Amino acid sequence: MSLQEKRKGDPVAWGLKDMLWASLTAIALVLAGLIALIIFLALFQALRGSPLDQKVWIWGVLALESILVVPAWFWGPRKYGQGWASLGLHTFPVVKTLVLALISLPLMLLINAGWELVRRQLGWAGQPNYLPLFGGGPLGLALALLIGGVIAPIAEEIFFRGYLYAGLRSRLGLGWGLVLSALLFAVLHVIPGVIPPIFLLGLILATVYEYSGSLWPAILLHSAINTLAFVAAYLTG
Image (cartoon, rainbow, N blue to C red; front, top):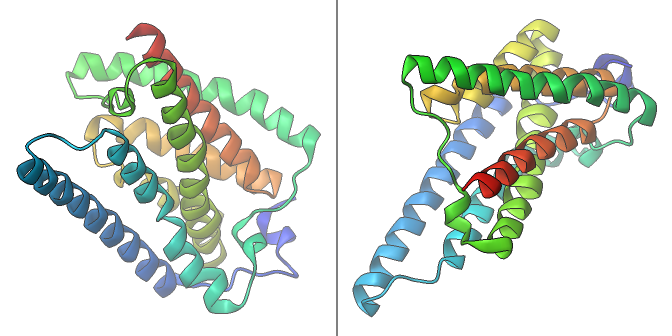
């Protein structure tokens, strides 16, 4: 069942102007939050003579990831009187989802592995290892998995697939919806060395959303990729 078929009785109401404002607001909120966190930590260290507990960074990252949901909700369901289901948070067909996962997850891992070889040949910088930010040991890994494996996938999928992809698909068609939402997803990760694989992963996640009729399978796949990355970093660190 495609998104268009699924939403005949529950159409995506937000338009291109809404998505532009939501995207600009998301960028502004994340940048403002990051600047505020850096200033706060610098002032604390200057006044107390010692750095603040590392947990503040963790909760700061958690807040910055979660904030993506705010503009998606404000310029989407809230503005047009719709519920969370309009962002794709529906139940999903189990069998179809399993088939999609069996195809998509190995493909996503292959893309990451293949690009890693290409990136090293090009000499480009890759994704930083964020695991040390969460501290060492099993507790640090658990906190990284909470934020990177649970919070981030939910927030990012709601914004990039549930809101942007659905809106772009509704206004511009399937092809443009796939490409533009994946491009925005990739570019907003900032680091040039990770943009190509993230763009391809964005295409896959949007396709999974399209053919499952629910955002949850995309969230679970996103969570699986992030979790495997943190576990690999922990085991090899």
